[in-house]
Length: 248
Image (cartoon, rainbow, N blue to C red):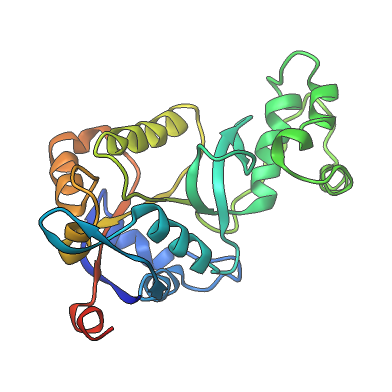
């Protein structure tokens, strides 16, 4: 069955509304409208029966559909914090991200062989591509572009702001896990400039399982614990277009 998704509710934290217009995708074009367009997508989902409800939706299937439809230039899926930068190996990180890749490489390089560096940094830097899910030749080529000597921190500025995001329709307890991941990353010195959190509201929340993370619970949690967050944030409540749903 085909469902039409839409953004029904939005809320901003830490001046997230002011920062939103400065976000860019991989082509250095405005990211906001690309996110909105992505979340207005049509999804082919299997209707399922639920107790005391006419029909339901499988959260995993919806999550997968949204991930597959996320094709914004420069987007990176499954983003992990490693060596003061980002990696894309594994499945336990942020669901998506947008960032300056050259800046990211510089941060990882500095972790190993910057002014502070680490033990056996030069050798570990050469093999870091294994943890970064990057071909060895590509990693070597990128490192060769940084000509400052080892023991010196390579200083460069971001060409665009760093954005990370989550798509969350899972168990309520995962909300705190997601927020803690963001806090841990920033406390490690990772430069994250903006956080996008996407969850269900309205009819969509009703069609998903009970006890899940939803827009209302997330908003309430952030109102009570907002001081924990320092990063500008955009909270998005995703819903099903009722008219499209009923005629499908």
